[in-house]
Amino acid sequence: MLRRIGAFLIDFILTILVALLVSVPAKAIMSYNPTVSKMDSTFESIAAKHGISLNITTEEFNAFTEEQNRAWEDTFTEISENEEAAALYDRYVRLSIIITYVSLVIAVLLSEVVVPLFFRNAQTVGKRLLKLVVVNRDSDPISLATLLVRSIFGKLLIEYGLPVFFYFGIVFGGGHSFGFIGFMMLVVAQIMCVLLTKDRRAIHDFLASTCVAKV
Image (cartoon, rainbow, N blue to C red; front, side, top):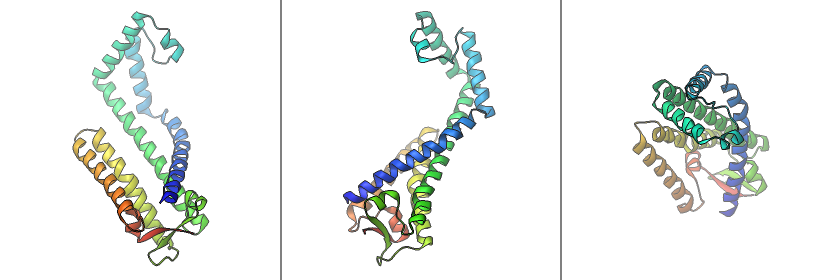
């Protein structure tokens, strides 16, 4: 059990690091998106009406006078009440989330599909370091089809995809209760699967008829 937790933590950290590396250039490119450019110009035009600029350093912000602080607060009050500015910011946030999720998809595919194929025994980096292997219910090596079901359908679409879907429901109107309840049900189901099954099988293991064993 401890080995599996350790392998999960190693793989999780590596996956997040890869996702961050992938998202950096994507977000840099996003700065040239018309929505982002229009949002920046809209925000700056509102700030200019109050005699300030939003493109300032931390040192410049800390040096604000009381009058400049009031102008700063008035600027963001007007931005929050401006329908066009709010709509542009909403699209910016959605675009950021999409980029983040696509980066996560790429990272998970590398960690859970490409690396196990390279090692040829369904091991991720964490499992290889802690001497664990994924096998079928007969303790035989799993096939490529089983690996794809386990990693893409089980992990990527359900264990990673559903939380993002529920997040959208929680953050963006209309699905707050459904999103929170769905997310908690998924978390509880995953914990129950791992803790209450004899061979500590997670949701993706049930879907692919696999289990994790010591080498």
